[in-house]
Structures are given as C-alpha cells and as structure tokens.
Length: 386
Image 1 (cartoon, rainbow, N blue to C red):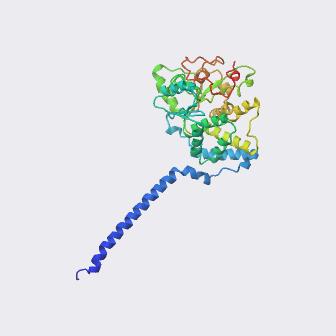
Image 2: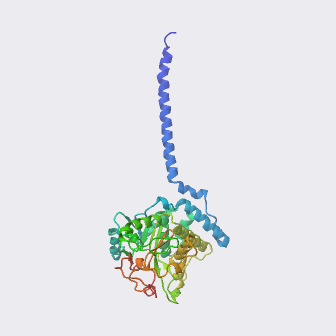
Image 3: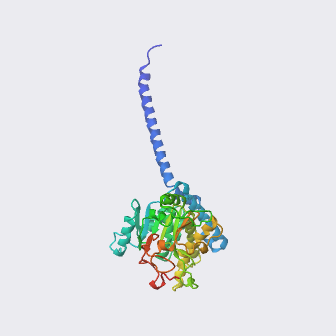
C-alpha cells in the first residue's frame, strides 16, 4: 500500500480541530446547563407558587372555604419551612428587632440604645438584626415569594401594629432565633435561659416541673432541653381576679414581645397560616378597618396579638398532652417543659411589673425587661393584675 495522499494528510488535522471545537462547545453547554440548574434550584421556591396556587380569595366568604384556604396555606408553608428538630440541636443564634426607622436614621430614638447594647453585649456570637419597616417588608416579599397570600395579607393590614405583630411570626418561621421588641433590655444572654429556671426541671410524661437538679448536672440538662425543644415562650399575665377579662385577652396570657423559636416550629406556622387566612377573609368581606373605639385593642389582641398567640400555643400543646389550658401553667414559678415547648414563668419576660407574682429584674429567673416605650397601649391599660 502506497503512502497516504496529500489530501488525506491535510484532512486529518482539520478533523482533529473540529473535534476540539465540538468538545469545547459541549463543555460550555454543560457548564451553562449546570449554572441554569443551580439557579433553578435556588429560585425553586419562586416557581412553587405557579404549581401550587392558593385557592381563590372568594372562597373565604364561606366557612368551608376558610378551612380549605387555611389548610392549603399551611401545607405549602410546611414544605417551604420544614420543622426538623432532630437536625437542629441549637436555636439559631440570631436576634431580630424592628422599628419604624433604622438605627442609622436620625429619627431613631436614642432611648432604645441601652437595650440594644445589652442584647448585643450579653449574646456573644449572635447576629443582631434591627430592621426598619421598609426592610422588613422587602424581607417578607423575599422569604414568602412562593406563598403569595402571605405577602398579600401582610400588606393588606390597616395598621403598623398588626404588621409588626405579624412580622415577628414570619421571621421566626422562616429563620428562627429570638425576636424581642425594640423597647426591651436583655438581662441575661439567651443561652443562659436554659440554665436559670429551666435546667433545674426535668421533663416527664405529664410535663411536671418537680425534680430539682444538682449544680453538676445543670449544664448537661440545659443542653438537652435546648436540643429537645423548639419554642420558648413566657407568661405575660396570670391575673387571679374575677375581672381579668377587662384587662387581658386570656386568663393566662403568653407574651409575644419576646419569643425564641427554631425554624419552622408548628406553633409559629399555625399562627402565620391563621393570620393570613383571617386577614384575607377580612379583605374580601370589607372588614379590614379597625373600629375607632376601645374595641380596636381587643381586635388587635385576637387578630395578631397575645390573644390568638396564646390560643395557638394551647391548641398545639393539647395535641402533645390531653387538653392543655391555663390551669396547667397558672402560678408556675420556674420553667416548665411540655412536649417541645418551654414555658417560662411571668418573672422571666415580665419582671418588675409588681403584680401576679412577678419578681424584680434582679431575680435569677428574670431574662428580659420590657419598658413598654413602644407600646400601642396607653399607660393606664398596662400591667393590671392580681
């Protein structure tokens, strides 16, 4: 066989070059596809809404439609923010606070600086976020893009106090951590909440706080309780008097000016779903506006405030043990654990109120002091007790 022709010799490098070009093209296409897939994954929650749309708002005009709407919202929130207690041994190390203006704004009041400083100083290793109203609204849009009815409900609310209440639940559901009103002062670091007044009790099947521990085991039990729980709440009011309903929404009322939660906790999810449904029901029925009377306060309490918050907690706890209500927690003087919820006594988040058995801010179980500087309630309607 003779030597290859000149035509074949010239054609070989051309074919090699074409092969290299094709390989490079395929590699670039693969990289582009990977990048596109990564973007698709990162923005999958944005597309979920189109695959799982909320029921029509007109459904909220009937009792059956309200139940269906709330169930749909609840299911999509569960998918978006799953509660995975086994994977999250510690509560997120983030402190969330909000106010009308950012601390960098000249309109931000200096009266809050001492409280802010205490939260930062006593919680080393925590991220401390102070969000103004605009930032909070943008964060709601971002976090809940795949559940648009939540966003619609948030911006439909007629009063800033309603949005402020709603936001604390929204941020804790999506991110977890501790929320505390801007007019609070930390008395002890968050991680110590499990060492003072909580580590000296042990859970049993009934949730009783009957076993006192030695100092040697306190730290160990504190770590266990933090690992095994997903929500920490404190009693705001425990008025043992016949006219308690003139001052409070519930006989025993949980405060929501300070809440510690792990991401996706079912109590927080339930209240987000409930508030979303109730707000949009009011919207479609033309009942969004609050009355221009004292009844406005009662509606706030039961729409977004401690009334509905307390109901949601007891509803959840009743699924943990048979029918839990105020009788199970009234008069407690130290922490109590029921299921995965820690309930702190009135002294923990309401020290110094001077009523209902609350001790002063110097007490070992006092964790947060509330000055009520940002309260929407008039002074003569605060801290009435028995």
